Length: 90
Length: 382
Image (cartoon, rainbow over all chains, first blue to last red; front, side, top):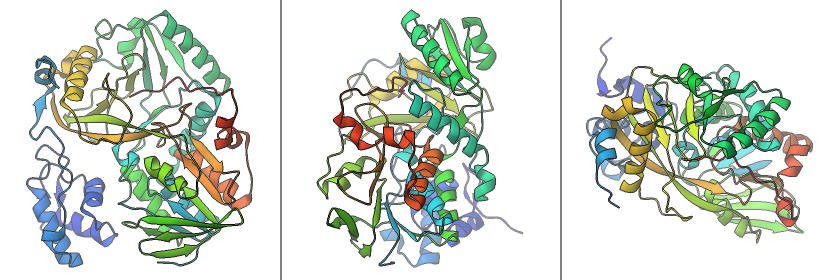
C-alpha cells in the first residue's frame, strides 16, 4: 500500500493522522502530542498545513479556524555549545 | 453532555484521567471537564520522570507503590505508555548534601526500595557521558527502578480506557461555577451546560485555586513557571535521569532519542507568566555542557514552559475538604504529579467509591496546613 508521509521529522503518514482523528484526537495540539507532529527539527513547517487540511476534510472545521500549535523557541536548532558560550543576555 | 453524574472531575491531566478510568472501573458514572485539551497543562509540559527517591515518607511510599503500578500499566490499558526503568542518579555535591542523602536512603530502604550510594568513580558506570569533576560531585545516589514514561501517551491511554468503560470526557469545556447547599456539592455549571453531582474532584493543576475560590475554599497553591528543553534525537547514550538538587538541573534521554531537561532560572519568582526566556537557554546549556561536555555539539530544538502548583510543604493536597461534603482535592503536586498519579488515583478511588481512607490520604489533607508542624519535602528539583 502507498504511504503518504505528512511529517518527515517523525515519519508520520496521512493514514496515521486519519487514524488518530478517528480515535477522537481532533485538536491540533492533541494530534501533536499523540503523533509528535511538529516536534521535530522543522517544528511543523512541513507538516502542520497538511495536518490542518486532513483535519478540515475529516471534521469540517475550516483550515482558517484551526489554530497553529504553539511555536517553541529557538525557531531553528542551535547547538548547546553556542548557547553556552553566548555572552550574558536577558 | 450528561446532565447527571456520580463524579465530576475538573481537569484532564494525568491525575484527572487516571481517576476517571479507575472510578469508571468501579462502575461509577464519571464526567471529566477540561477547559483546554487533554494533557494541556502541567502533565503535557512535564519532564516525564518517575522517581522514588524522596525525603518524606508520604512521597516516597506514594512513588514506590506507583512504580509497581506503572510496571503493569501498558498491558492494563492496552497501549504502550513507553515506561522504562533506567534509574535516577542524584548527584551529591558536598558533606551537607551527603548527610541528607544518607538520611533519605535510610528512609527509602526502610520502605523496601533498592537504592545505593555511589562513589565518584562509580558515577560514569551508570551514566558514561558525565564529567564527574565538571559536575563537582563527591558521590551520588542511584535507584535502578526509577525511570520515565511518556506523559501524553499515559494520559491518552487512561482517557481512552475510561471512555471505553463509559466515562464522558469533555474537552474545551470550562467550569463557570460550583453549586452547594447544606455544605455539600450539588452541581457543576459549565459553559456547555450543568451537571448534577454529589462529588467534584478538583484536579485542575494551577487553576485548582480558582476552582476552590468558587466555593470560598482557599488553597495554599502558588504557580511557579518552569522551563524545559529538548534536543535533537541521538543514538541511545544513557538510560538514567540525572538530577542535582544543588544546581536544580535534571535531564534524561527519552525513548525517541532526544535529551529532555530543565533547570530553574536563579532570579525566577512565582507567577503566571508563560513566555520562555533566553536566560533559561543559556543557564541550561552552560550547566548541561558542564555535566556532559560531549553534548556541546548537540542541537537544542525546542524549549517550553509549564507550571508547578506548589504547596507550602511541596506535597500534594488530597482528599475531601472538611467544610464541603463531596469536594475532593487532587492538586498541589509541586512538580511531581505525573510520577505519583497511579497511587494518587488509587487512593482517591478507594475514598470516593468505597469511603475508605488511609494514613497517607489523611496526612495529605488540606487540614494539615492548619497545624503548626509541617514536614517539608526537601528533594525537589527543577
